[in-house]
Length: 480
Ligand code: F0G
Image (cartoon, rainbow, N blue to C red; front, side, top):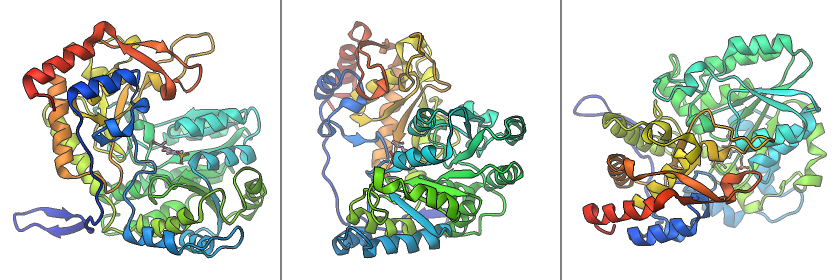
């Protein structure tokens, strides 16, 4: 954003870009939405994109690219080995992160897979601020265990603590001293996805690095959303207001022994990478690339994406291009909070997160309040959000339900994609849904897959509350 002084006091943040290509979207009627959500088994993952008005499922792979990125996809050099686009990527990683060794991979979870293979031996642990679904899966597949030690404020959705993504450094020291030789690495996710897109402070990363050095454990930084984390450090952390995003990202990366990212996020392409200055780690990792991903100069990515990624990495620290979606998220969170809607505070990255436990207080957790809320939001607005609660957890081995720490829905704002009027529409429909929340009676399984059930599971609405909600919608708001 371009920040200027407002003539009426305070500051004004203005997008440092304009839109030259648009995609037409349409708003299906509430009857069409009812049919679609029933057809999708009340699972927003199973909706067809053409039945969705605002697709806020994720920011992954759906960010608006820049003209320079698109142009680079045409001039990208097709080569199996040693292509020019690869060397452009290496240079970008050196400039942006200050790291010399670069391994492209096809997406973030591929990086997690290779890191787990190289760094984790069965019985070892990875200590993290908070897990992400794929990061945890790869640690466990390698025979390891993931230990989460977020600061206590992280799980309190109404706390305004500015860095809820921080690691509890007291607990970290305790664990590192107790588990000598058994910690594969410490993982910092910036911003912390499943905590509601909450950032990590620079001070916290620095302290974590000091402890890692003291106990000779590598620090791995998941930098998938580092653009947003840097924006919040600049805004919220004392001493960083006058630093550039580029300086902030460089400093963050400087504390990491290994950095990896899903390039489907901050650099706005479809790919991933691992970077390090440690030659030993690089050599262990690079031999696995041709086995699992592709030759090291493309790592399973299309060269078009590789070229666009080199540009996207530089653009993710360009002040003009970063932050418009964060300002929209802030607007929605503040509007909802003013109207007493249970929303995760403070406004974070990634999206607006509603607290389904408080939104649907009348529902027992066994009827999946977060999944019910995601389904209901789609029905009343055509907005596709993602369940991030108990349905996103799988059952324990004995079949018991494992209740998630937080029962959220995530309404993602992909980079540079939606506008202020979309945000206003979203607020309007959430307020209406809150007034009519008593109609929502929960969901029950029709088909429950044994693993990662949230992707393909199908449910139905208890007592057909969807029909009732649609009827009230038509009466009060019309068909749209
Ligand atoms: N790390 C973080 C912090 C992520 O948010 C993701 C993906 C990954 C790793 C895995 O990367 O998808 O490229 O394999 N997050 C997506 C989301 C799926 O919707 O938040 P990937």
